[in-house]
Length: 292
Length: 234
Image (tube, rainbow over all chains, first blue to last red; front, side, top):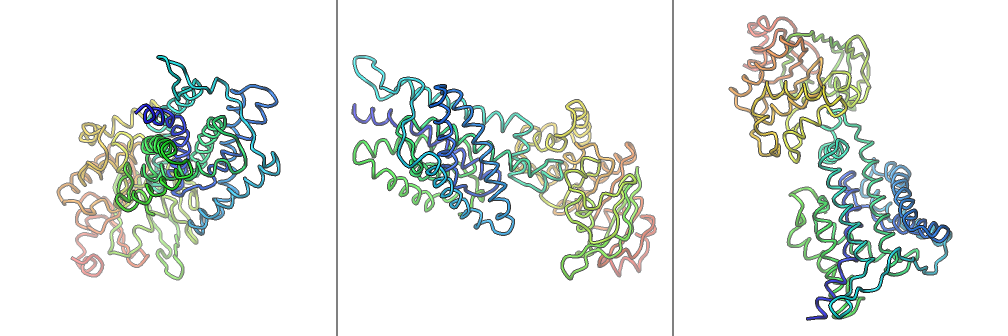
């Protein structure tokens, strides 16, 4: 029982980061109706940028802020250089092109920063807290990760529900024609979607890096988990992405704890397959929002 | 107010509009009637900027707007209520309305919202509900309300009677016609349902295969039996 609780608690922080990556996928889906498989590649790249800033200035917060900006810019660059030219003629082609972007980013990062895994020093202690006579699998850093994720989710929710930009973005996603007829500059909303998704992914990357190491391919597995969470959540739902992101984190932690961490990805894919068989619209999606 | 000069639109080899001349004055309803495929929706989509014409002019307030983007055209005061599902069902009634005038000043938007709620009180009662919970007639009112939120000088209504009970259509159109007179609004109404359209309109224009075959006062058009048999099917 103690093991079970430990595994469960240990999964939250990882789940929060999966939730952020899933959110990034959902944000792109909502603006452009496609999955961006380069999302983790963009996050990996901006995490390297953050690492460089941290190594030269020692300032974690500055590194995070620069990564957020870089993530937003990179998202817009990917949209303009790759997605927009391809998507007009072929929307499946655009999805395949995101794999190309992923590989290009990984190769680029390898050339700039090298292929060896590098450590990312957390801004606060990452050792388990001692409380009530034992050490718990939650560190001050985990608490930082969870609070940052919660703050971001609340911020995004407010952005989408309370602001004019959010309303314009939602309208553009649901019905671009009515949005244009209402005076919304839909193209700008697509760009905003990619920028916000890129920034969200960048935050996820910087937050997960201290938990392991960073290398050009270290986030690949995160793509599997984030994609699973986003799809099970309905691809269209922010709350679905967050719920199933954290849920996936917990499942991974339990599977890794009781068997082997190598099995986690297999379990995730089995869950994904089951979801697509049993509830193809996703748990939080409405009918027809997602066609696979 | 709104004028087209020799407007031509084709889709590939198909000519949807061939040399269309039309004038829509302020303060009244102009009805364009005609059967399916006469080019009515193409006309509306071209005026609103969703379709680019091959040749000809669209003059709005004396300025040429043909080829401009729809999001710019609506900002100059020409608002289209497109055919069918032109509300966003996932948004609330209030959000659908707010969407209609997001680029405007907050205070101006408030005035438009009051006007819409006065015109269609049901929208005020249902403000916080999702648009897909509304009935067909309420949704059409919402679609018109959204267009009015842009404070248009000219309102384009594409087939508002589609799928609605005749009584509701008449009620809505009479409100629009009164609004046109009271606020000096130009209204261009496109309808397959000629009887209802000509009842609220001042001027009628009969369209067939992309060409104007007859225009005149609404009374003149509706009492021309030959015209009715030939083009309007009743």
